[in-house]
Length: 369
Image 1 (cartoon, helix red, strand yellow):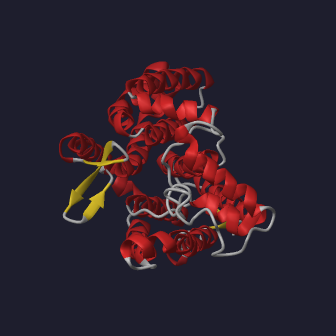
Image 2 (cartoon, helix red, strand yellow; image 1 turned 90 degrees about the horizontal axis):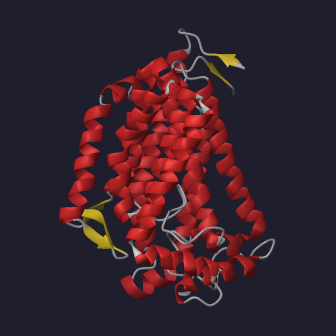
């Protein structure tokens, strides 16, 4: 274990193992996006590289944003938490007025040809906001009143997201629970909050019949009309076996799996790289989460630790939900696989979060190399 002193801190650039893992996942993602999308891209766009070219542009933007976050002291972000939260609420409200529908729900705001998903910005901002207020609350986080007040502060954003995107709302709730629990370390309020969160999710399930239909499809995936995407995903996973068919040789990506390059890309990974390849990808995510936990443990203050725990929760929950959906362990819902799935807004804000964790690692009291 190497202690980072004031003298050598300027030369310390963060966690190289974390950065290497992130860029390794991104590069693998580019390869898989091309493999999973080249058939449909050539068929519908006239360019086999259409999606991978767009993703490369997003990676460049995300890399620039990540390095900006690495240079920006995270304490300055914490000071901007309240205005950022207010902005995220305005953007979420704007979706209901000027939003563009995706899969039957308004989730996007378009400026010309550029699309922006406010719910992804909300996830990013809520991590900063909750770390700020929980860190400032101090001993109040040991009391029921403080815990419930924090929970109520985040509910407007969570509620607006859940109306149009329940799966993202679940991730937001999960991030909030983990940050609040880390700050309070009180088990009973944590379980009460989980019960309240489950109650809210039950209400939102009842508000839209298509969500109940997804549960029915999950329970009857072999026969239900809405189980088609999941069935094709399971065919891909099963046909991959232990070592897979080989890169580029997936059959199910040939217009059988909808969104093969996006939410269902893990099934193509399983088909082309087999159980072994899928296991390696899962291991890389676990390694990335472990590096984040190391940074949280060595953060210079409670707010830095809570920020890192929020990012860890975001990565872990999104990875687990995506893989669970692809393997039919939970009902089908649209959540991308971090750093690998095609998508602009999600990747950019995930890279921003990694930049913040790197900044915290730079200022950490200790660091394991």
